[in-house]
Image (cartoon, rainbow, N blue to C red; front, side):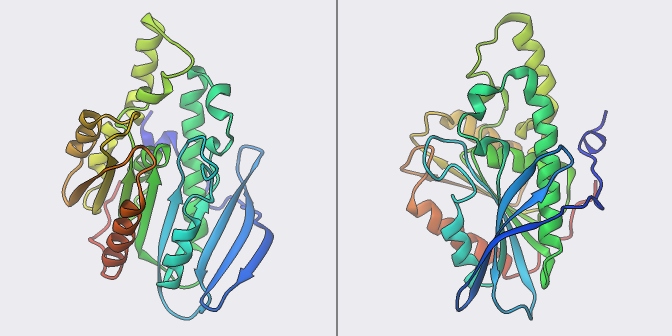
Length: 278
């Protein structure tokens, strides 16, 4: 089965958005809401946008990291999204399967492929939400992902051509690099799992994001992404691309945040290259 078929979804699916609150500032409006999925559960999200509806605005989809930190959820990029919205971007910050703090230890390798399919379909629905926003410019849509957010962001871009720019933070090139942390798997079952996940791997799919500009951000002291893994991920991508290293661990640091904001602002101020076709 092709990836396009595997991750196919109904673009007319009723998202049934339900508001959980709105905050209005002088420049920015922040909406807390949930939306339906085809899988019988709902996902939570924040949408942060310029208060002024007139105009044309770039979009940013933020996909958070997995960690034990308090911000390992859709709040991770909230301050950054407020800043970018004040600069004229519509930002969507979504809940994911790894927003559940115990998700990683509750899952098994038997679940990972099917979970990945559901996650990508949820992210395609998130793009639909952004696309429906008044003033959204489909020619300027960035995806920012950290950790699993970066990895699933690559896979999303492989099957959905809408993102035009990517910031990929501290991701590893193979899903097996992390999914084999737990539970232990050896011998033939391990080999079979690696083969099953290989078509989904960032290493397999990142070249297909071209001609979208890519910014890779890595920590020099990241225990989960050693330098050779980071370099392999970057090397597999096509130009235009850039890699930046930081004196940091897996969380990266404030310098990385400043660099990312500056890169996004510069990139989204100008029209993107023609979109790829699937």
